[in-house]
Amino acid sequence: MMKKNNLGISEKSLSYIMVCVGIIALFVLAVIFPLHLYTGNQAVKIKRIKDQIEEQKILGTVYLNLQKTLGSNELQVLPNPKKTTITREEAAKFKNVFRAVAKKSGLSAISITPDLNTMGGFSKYNAVVKGEFTNFRKMLIALVAIPYLDRIEEISIQQRSDSMEFKIKIWLALGA
Image (cartoon, rainbow, N blue to C red; front, side, top):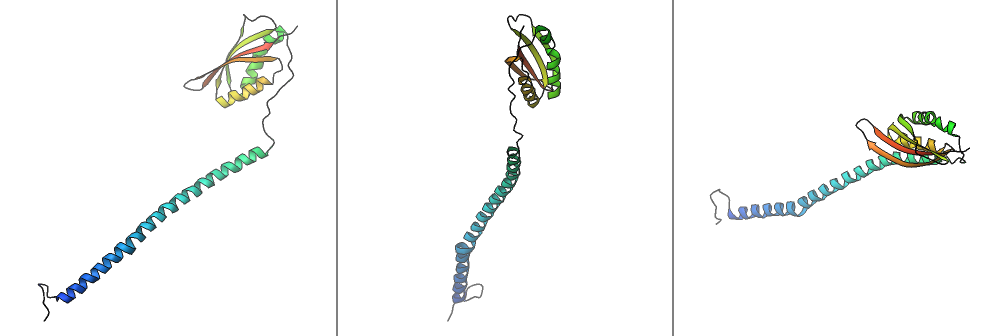
């Protein structure tokens, strides 16, 4: 005769239930849990690949713009005029030329003063302009195009609260 426990279930039925619960637990541990971990890892990989695709789309437009710029023949060539000299009277008008170049480049000319201590065939000017760095680059390119500009001796850059301040020492070649 079969023994019954407090619940009224025979020991044989109870052992079958325990075996079935064990099989279900083993199935969950052996199949479902690893499958859950695998799908979680796959979701992370999918997200990473989607992020890479978005990054490539953004970089693709930048690359196309760069290719378009390089493909066009608008590469800026620095001017290299034949060097000449000017008279002292014409050198005195350099202030107006410098102010025009600065204004055309988008900078504001604060001051341009001649250095009276220069001798020989050169005239030196100390100039101060304010504005953005990219505009300063444009101004330097325009200054290099002036044929009687001998050299730019010194450039000093200071960041101010509203813009950048550029101090330049410019040498002009004087002739007869």
